[in-house]
Image (tube, rainbow, N blue to C red):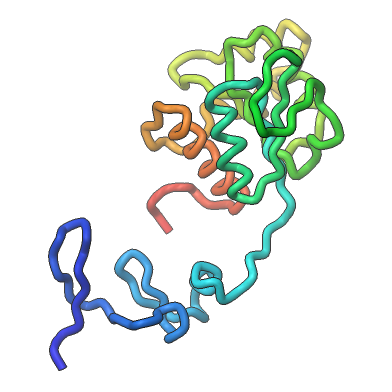
Amino acid sequence: MGEERVFDLVSRRWLPGFRAQANPGRAGPCQTAGMTHAHDEDPACEVAHSEAPVEQAERTLVAVFASPVAEHLLRFGAELGFRTILLEPDPGRRLGGFTAVTEIGDYVDATADVVLTDHHREEIGPVLRDLLKSPARWIGIMGSPRHTGPHVQALTDLGVPPEEIARVHRPIGLNIGSRTPPEIALATLAGLIADRNGRPGGFTF
């Protein structure tokens, strides 16, 4: 038989060295990004081919302040298995289709990742101060790394010590050059998943 080949949609060329199978999910090797490996070497392959149950720990995503980024965070987060909650102190601001609360409650527990999606809101100081007293697993606020975040002064004015302020992550998410609300939400969630899994979140595996 001749050399087995596969057509690459990116280069639009036939490439050698790929093992073609009618049903790669059940025939043994798993083909991912041009690589062939055995299923028993990578449990993720079995999950990808629906051959193993997905074991997922309970996790909560709290998006603070109603905003376009918060809407995408909650939507994508739900697809990723997060329990999603919008924390919006202003009862007049809501996002349709999402659970919304005005105060920090018991739902901000040790499973919670909290993302402040608007650093211009005057409530950032009190909200962050109370969040830092909660058992939240991770707390972050959006903003450019080129400038000192306004939350630093806001928390300082409230008497929050520097070591507590330093617990607030900024910038947040992976550096993928995101600019639009969906891209920012995607980068943020990817960073949270990498952090939860103890991974660097880049192209090095």
